[in-house]
Image (tube, rainbow, N blue to C red; front, side, top):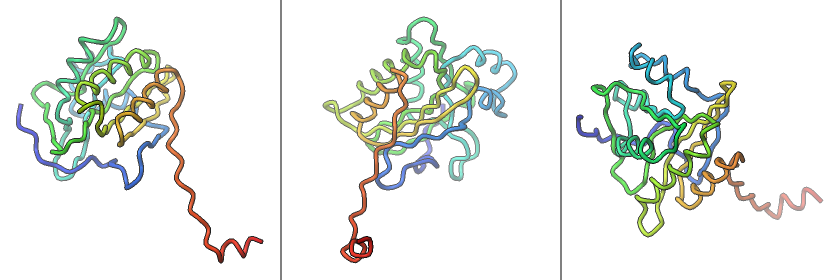
Length: 198
């Protein structure tokens, strides 16, 4: 596999102060199975998966799919540690796999598309993988998880912030609760605004 190109952050990288965002009407399994870099033979294999590792596309000047550094390790860890019923695969041909690196201390996790029925099983394994990479239990995590319901509806959670808060978000997902973005601090009113409202 070729060395990771030095590239900037993914297109969805957070703005200052934004930790968690949730997007509805996201791309589920069907979208990824029809990508041009997925052959018919690979598609037959991927259709069995209920956890799919998918690439970043149209990444700055780079044409073609890319995965964050450490994706191979994540792939093998999820396969080895997940309980029965969890089928993990990666949405790329072996010969087309390429990585990018951000060259910072952030623990970036590849985009995962997960069936909601196995979600409680997967989030615990995913946290164990992250925990191994933390320094004294602390660190910054960047992750993107798309949860697909049995009817095909999908929503994506994008996170970029402290590892401990990401753990809490994973726990909520695993228990069936939808994490909510943290409330933005209210802007203090000026004296002039306060007088106008009296």
